[in-house]
Length: 309
Image 1 (cartoon, rainbow, N blue to C red):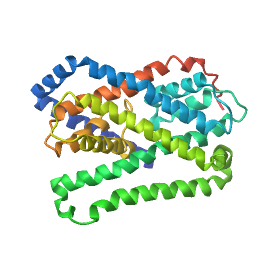
Image 2: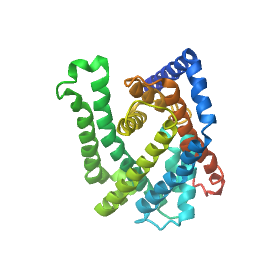
Image 3: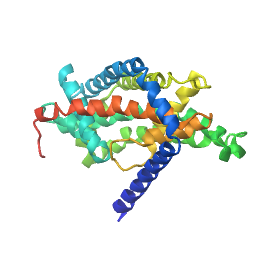
């Protein structure tokens, strides 16, 4: 019953978001046609964003190698296959669980199921910059949104994002220190407790670099338009988008397509910026960073020796 309810909630949210975006597209067709023409005449900008994609996933490959090194050494080629195939399988599975399976199947080891813990840590490390910068972006958003005007002059606007960040860090610490003592989980998460602080710091650093590459890609795609806002405000808009796609529950159809566009439109509209260039830039970013790597990853999936157990 609970699973059905959660599925229904996610489906309703996803459909509502898609309806919102379609409404914006059909009510402002001229703006979308102009924005699309701008991209067609500035293909070099799209190419620049595309050329950054390999560096984006290079950081993820390094994270995968670093997180699993206490279990086994992964050559660069093998680690790359695991990451890209993870994008492909995560693309079509609920909560991107296919990413876990792809990485576990991408190497041979008698205890490769223990890789589940390091994979989780690597994914959690990406949440650190997402929550940190997203918290600032959320504060700016609710201070600019008219419905929140009553709260913009006090400290209430800081409460939710700061409390959320603290709660995430606290829960992560408690899980790593105590949760993995559970006998049922010990086998899978034992490697987490063996991670050194230096390795965790390196994972967060690599995650931060990847976060900034994402941001630069989006800012490049927005750069052909004359926005009356600073680069710092654009960066916070991107941070708000990444935060939303990380915390909002959605039906896993085409990965996070829709959430990016919806959240970006909400943020940039507070600066009186048209939805058309924002939606198109977000769609292009999704095609470059998700759809294309997922397509490439399909070529690696048949190479895996899948263990049904």
